Image 1 (cartoon, rainbow, N blue to C red):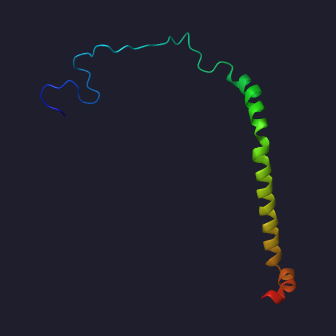
Image 2: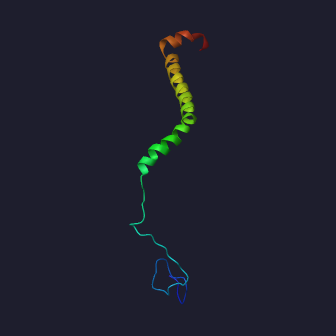
Image 3: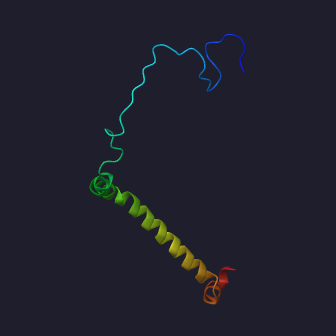
Length: 91
């Protein structure tokens, strides 16, 4: 705790001299609308924006998933009996 006469008080202490020149603005809760029509605006604007970006996500995802599924099936083939027989000369 600071001692003596200080202008800036300790954190959260409101017993000091009120400061001059501070302006506080408030808005009535009856005049504010936190989320007016957010669902309908998302349905139209959000879907429109997401559909414009769809190809930027769909194409890399499809390539990645295709590579993953091919590699998984190829690995299963190489670890099977048929794969060992077919690639016996490589071991």
